[in-house]
Length: 202
Image (tube, rainbow, N blue to C red; front, side, top):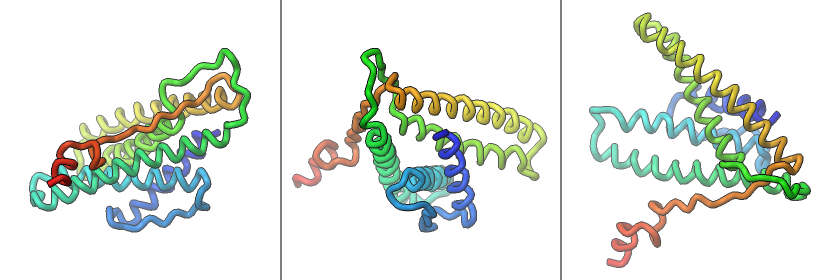
């Protein structure tokens, strides 16, 4: 099932990142380019790096100039994350383009790739909550609280995985159909963000 493929690749990506645990470590994608696995690994790697960028920018002692650079890097990463979701949806659109959609077919509230995006973030939450649940220097109260949260996250991943698999089956069988809307993020676009296009015009 697609969720199993996603979860295994996300786990590999997260573990690979934490070999160095450095936001500047270059990605070494082990999967064949243009395949779904390659896209999933890249998607989660971007998510993982951004997770740690978000940690860094919350350092109360951070230098303001460094924080600004991090903020711009996070903005760029957010755009890359959105682009990756759209690439993954394009893969699914191509895969199921010849499905005979039934007259009674309905559309889902989110595309498959946006559901996969949530699964990727869940993998990161599970990884880091597991670390906290076993952190030796933490209090028993902290570890117990994190263990309970971890149980909830694991149940959430199980439910979301089942929902994604069910959605893909419905699309494959023509009971659901895909319609993908571009996110049209405006803040990075010099023609749409007033601050950017006013400065450009000067």
